[in-house]
Length: 228
Image (cartoon, rainbow, N blue to C red; front, side, top):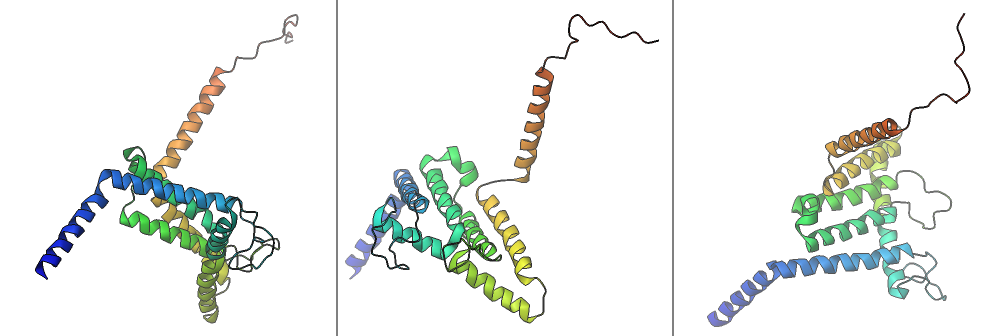
């Protein structure tokens, strides 16, 4: 029994060393980015009329990845609505950050808190998108935030409505949106200084462009008018 336990401990220690090895970390990053890229392709070609778990159809799937792509695209759209797009893009970004290393990790280092903020940001954005009524052309029965957004916003709005709070859905939508933007900005490493630096750079380039323009000269043949 002790020999089996020792062997198990050794196998576990070896697996942990291999899992944490740089080549294994980069491989996991590449694999994550590739799988997320495939999911992005499925989302781009998503068609709500394609056969899936939520739609029975005899027609052939039009999704670029076939039936599997149609199923996964419909599943994530039904769950998160339009928030599925930033979710997939974040998966690609974090995968590339892990695969490439220091070139991207100074902003996208996948710390546990950043992963938490990424998940929270996507879910909060889903809830914010479900606050307004979906347009008539929206193809899903769920709102623009998917089933998750409808559940969170609906339950919270009903609770505030029971307390006679006016405009509960508007208040919740703005609150969820602000929290989502903050969480996602922190996730990708955006800072307030980045916006001020960008504005300063744009102002400097505009001033340089105006200074480089040639000064307007008077047309030849026209003498200046004498002042009496």
